[in-house]
Image (cartoon, rainbow, N blue to C red):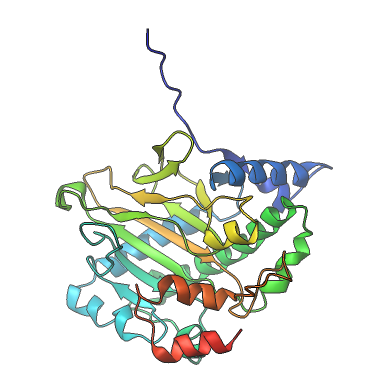
Length: 323
């Protein structure tokens, strides 16, 4: 008789014990749970994150507002025409090597809103759609700032899991690179055979904070030891956190950077939003100061995305010079 295979679920961790500890041992318990999940899966789910449910719902409304604009209006905000790669990405603009077809998703990018363009677009102003403040810029800016703070806290937790002081994060967070990507996936019925919402990949850098529209599943994470994809449900007020390639590298492989992909499982449109917390463009591995490669976050960024995003020669030169 064949035994039933137990279904794997990503750990769900209440991180409020770290963010707002009430008794001795609360922070240590969260650190241990996060460490174990990052070692085994590279992914975990969190609650008790402190981001208000009302703001999450406002974000969904704002994403609808921007993605429902006329195509011509969205294309005027194309991220391909922006020195900071902020703004709109249409469906089909992203084609991952090895995938038969480009991604079906469309996106809108924002980041740290600096007044002038610096480092050939690493820093600079956002593009904001012609919508009332309360219908996009206001809630999106508030949400960005809250996930920015959460990303820094998650880095601290991960560092403590490597027996490093939480203060280590200050060594690479003076002016961190923190892009945010709002995403809309078309209905499953509108996707070509063999096409993914987002094809299988690992994230480039640090901590990813993923918000999924509740009840609209699609995320799958690759489980190495079982050699299968794990479905990650889209639950209200639950965030998905994962480690990127840079964390795997900096931790000497202690933490995993797992492949993942998105296949919209519902017949309607699906929304999600990812905030990527990397660190300072000039920063090198604070856990291994004598690393002979001495590569900066900016150099790792250029190495990963130089071909995919056709970064300018000026940007590539600036990043190299920043080492």
